[in-house]
Length: 301
Image (cartoon, rainbow, N blue to C red):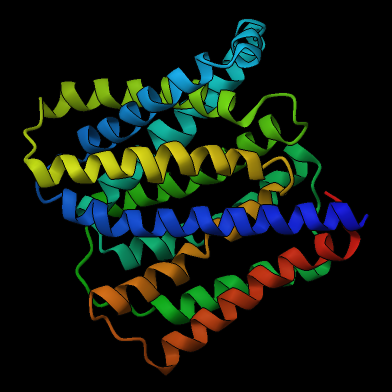
């Protein structure tokens, strides 16, 4: 049991590290969107990450064998994960950031844990304890305290896309947990196959809708960093954590990005955090801790 608790704690730490990398992505995406169209930007990021990871997969005999042993059902599940997690969620995120302030998009995405909690009951059989429901509620209250009111003008298109992204993100959490929780597939295999499907779909769609983008040196630098570090490394590690963490735990940890983005904006963009915002961040963090508490106590997943 002690070993199981330690494994759970390590998975939580790894997941928090991944969310930190993803939080820095928001700043880089905002900068890159000034030059690169949204869908093409997302397609380039994830296609390059796929091209980085694929040779690593093929270089390992046991993973090549596992790839060849995938059944039609396995391919369908991993492809569906790729479409929902990369094409819809990540592609939609880039589009939404082109229309909405990052604060408003973060607020809408903060409702993902509640959706995941509800979806996890019928699809995964993962029921929340009372303390975990309290954690979800506390997180949402903290997010609302921090982010409301939003004074910036809002785009109707951006709001619709943001809601779609939130729903797709919730479904992706359920699919990702379903694929990874039994440990049947290696995390790298899950990442490469699902990312390959989703990224190619994103890139083809972007090129068809937006044309071929023209990037300068800084644009390519942003794309390459996002592809190699914030995608190839981060998504492989994230799939690894899904072997230990439940869907709702992963979703809540993912939403600590709200706090991380706020702190990064304060440090690097000069956006101040007042008493109201600090209270919201504190409540959101307490909510995340409450959701983790039952698993840490029992050592079970």
